[in-house]
Each structure stands twice: as C-alpha cells, then as structure tokens.
Amino acid sequence: MPSKPSPITMDAVYTAPGYLFRRMQQIAVSIFVEECSAFDLTPVQYAALVAIHTHPGIDATRLSAVIAFDRSTLGNVIERLESKALIERKPSREDKRVKLLYLSKSGAVALRDIMPSVERAQLRMLQPLKPADRKTLLALLTQLVDLNNEASRVPLRAEDALEHLGKAG
Amino acid sequence: MPSKPSPITMDAVYTAPGYLFRRMQQIAVSIFVEECSAFDLTPVQYAALVAIHTHPGIDATRLSAVIAFDRSTLGNVIERLESKALIERKPSREDKRVKLLYLSKSGAVALRDIMPSVERAQLRMLQPLKPADRKTLLALLTQLVDLNNEASRVPLRAEDALEHLGKAG
DNA sequence: CCCATATTGTAAGTATACTGTCAATCATCA
DNA sequence: TGATGATTGACAGTATACTTACAATATGGG
Image (spheres, rainbow over the protein chains, first blue to last red):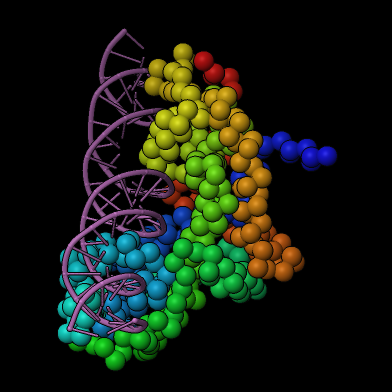
C-alpha cells in the first residue's frame, strides 16, 4: 500500500539542503559585497579576474570551465570587466574565432588591492562557527562539491586551463 | 612592517567558502530542476507555494520574510505563479494596499504532486556523502545560516507569518 | 581538397536577486 | 484632525544563471 504523504509544513523548506544552500549563498554574496564595497567588484567578477591573472591569454570558453561559470553568463561578465578597463581582449592569430583575455595594468592593481577585503569576507562567512566546525564544514563542502561536479550544468574543469598555453596569439 | 601578500593562485578561489557556496547552490538548483522537470516549477516557486499553502491569506511582504526572498524578486515570482493559475490574489478589505495570496485548486494539486520529486532532489544533493557526514553538514549549515541570518539583506522572519491571521479579508 | 561535425562567441529569452524609487495607503502623534 | 512618517506593491535598473539558436570558423574523414 502507498505510504501516507506527510503534512506540508514550512519545515519542508527550512530543513531542505537546497534551501540552506540558497540561503547561505545569499548571505555569502551579501557579506562579500559589503566588505568589498570600495571596489565595485562582484564575487563573480573577482573570480574571473583571479582566473585571468592565473591564466593570461585564456579564452572565454576555457575560463568558464576553470571557474565553473556558465559560458553565456560569462560573456556579460567579461563585457563589464572590459568596460571597466580591468581586462583586455585580443584576437588570437591561430584561431580567428577566439578572443584572448589579459589583465590590464589597472586590473592587476585592483586585484591586488581587493585581496585583503576578499579574505576578510571569507572569514566573516564562517565566523559564527567554532574553529573546528569551520574546518569540518569546509572539508565536507569541498568534498560534496567535488563529488557532485558532474551534476552541475557547468562542471569544473581546472585542467582545461592549461591547454591554451601553446596557443597564445 | 606590512605582511607580504601571498601569491594569487586559483586556490584563492577554489578553497574560498563563498565560491563553494555558490558552486553548491548551482548544483542544488540543477538537481532540483532535473528531478522536477515534469512540473515546470523552480525551487523558488516551490518554496513560495509551500509558504502560501502553510499561510493562506498571507501578503507578499510577509511572504518574503517567511522564505527570506527579496521582496522585489518575489513580485515577479508571484506574477508567474498567478499566470500559471497556481495561486490567486485577492485584495484585502482591511488594508487597500495589500493583496492576499491563496493557493488555487490546481496549485494545491501541483504542490502535493511535486513533493516526492522534491524529496528525491534533496536526497540526491547529499547522496555522495556518507550518512553521518550528511547529518554533520546539514547541522553545521543550519547553524551557520541561522547565526548569519542578520548578515543577509533579507533576514528570515518566520514569526512574521503569523501576524496576518487576524486580518484576512 | 571537400563536406560533415564541432567549437567559439554572441544574442535572445526566462528566472532569480538585489538596488533604488514612487504613489497609494495607513498609522501615529502633536 | 491633520501633518508626518511608515508600509505596500509596483517599477526601473543592474548582475548572475541558465536555455536555445546562430554565424563564423576549425577540424577530421573520405
């Protein structure tokens, strides 16, 4: 016989992992924006800057794999970074479809200057937990994100970043 | 003397709590949408339906406090739910500014029917972890979200939901 | 070398998430 | 009571996140 459906309460929402992940993400963005308010950089824009700094001459498609952001979304992010003159786009000589991404002078400066604020924000997100619990949560979360990598629409492909190194224009 | 800045690597991104929260949220939404593809309901719309079911006659402002979603965002969500005929909006007699929210017949059916898929999705998100680790992660996350409640732009105010009960129209 | 297939960037369309602002309405207090 | 300030829903604007589609370009097999 079929199992009786449980009554629907707000607990069905409040205790669901998906709801907690959404809520925590909202909180994390809120803290990031607050700590970094002096820099006019969003979390996504910051991550893109770090990746371009680490992989100069990367193209947008590989960049999306390296930070696991949607390729279409990243187009707009890159546009905004370019309009703020934080990055530069140069056509590749080897592949006319590709535009290579580089940090500009001011982009490198902005990245260096924002780092302390970013680190403060990351600390603040976990601050309410006891130090031991912070480590546990971070370890479990790292593990879960890694094991669920293929479940996301844009899996992380960190290795892809290396392929561009022979192709710089 | 000032401390030397650490070199910037992708680890500055990959190990940051904020990045892991974002990634996990992407994965969670992806799994939810996949499991619930038969229902044309997003996670946010599902949460709103549950809250309206649990608090019939609630208004949009209180609803936003009950599920901790931005009030402006929620306006569009409500619009979509109404255009799908899953909820109904009725003006309040006591306060001409307010529109009270109720589940429609088909909304109640949709909510009942989607529950098993939602539960499957919630299980899948944590599936890769060992059962004991799932409990630990959930407990720490619940604690962290609660302790960080005020840090978010839209703090959860579960109690606010009760205030409308005397005002229904 | 040519054609089928894949890749790259771009764009349009939908949905969340936030910032403001605004008019209508309500509640309070001098 | 009547002016003040708060609340409600609506709207405009920006940013992320995803889908599908498309043109230009590359690549590989025959």
